[in-house]
Length: 136
Image 1 (cartoon, helix red, strand yellow):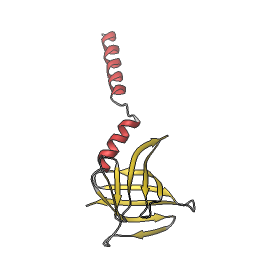
Image 2 (image 1 turned 60 degrees about the vertical axis):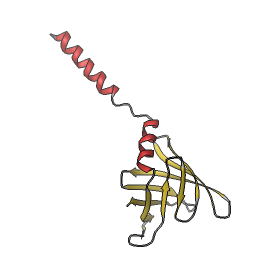
Image 3 (image 1 turned 90 degrees about the vertical axis):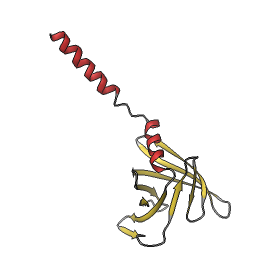
Image 4 (image 1 turned 45 degrees about the vertical axis):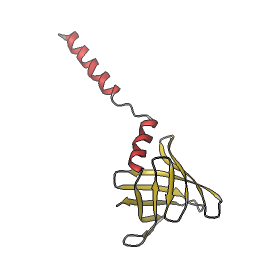
């Protein structure tokens, strides 16, 4: 009976460990599926202690398409990729401005869900800006 109990316990432990393997590829696949083919509207941003609300206004939005391209309401287009660097999930965006100049932006993904997205980026002053989006 003790041997059967030990075998059963070993199988349970093995099964729990086998089902709990999260890889960076799994993370990026899940995030991509939640990000893509939606218009993400900027509701508000927080920089330091300053909050700026865009709710109820004609506002900025960005769309991440399934083919790896992105476009926003400012007319910027480019490509993006979701990556996990260390323990941080990020969106790496390669854009071209209206005048044709290249621009790279890296956002840390704070959270992403079906209807809400929170990103963070560090601006040139060294202060992080958190951006709060919803899709409608």
